[in-house]
Image 1: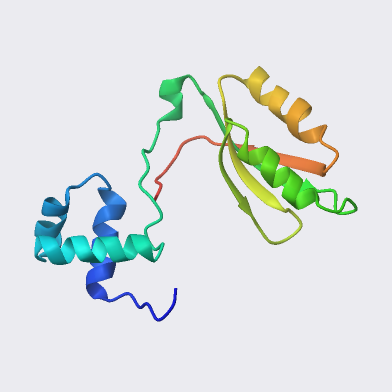
Image 2: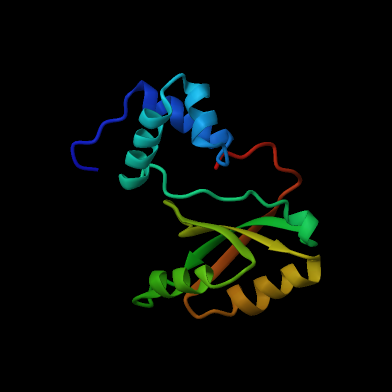
Length: 151
């Protein structure tokens, strides 16, 4: 962001949109006590500056038949040049990965995985991840429940 600073009104708009991303500009302007034209201008600027990068639907994966929800930590095979890029591309193209992030420490990636049942999750771990030459190890943590989430 070049010479772009967020003020209190920008932060207020972001807070409201974070909770209600489908709100109309008219509703948003009423909620933040700003004229509709000013509100629209600010939202457009936040989008142009990539502060607001998009609007998404939050999906209940269990309603799609995905009863397994897990965090998987991936450690790369650091002896293979380009491993990070190849694994990132692999993860991006797998529908069972709902979130992926590069992290610090002994582990390289943390991904959120969904699967219908334990056999499907096991297949993902064994056939897709642990057998990949750029991945040296994985560690998985099954989610018991989602306490909350912020888009």
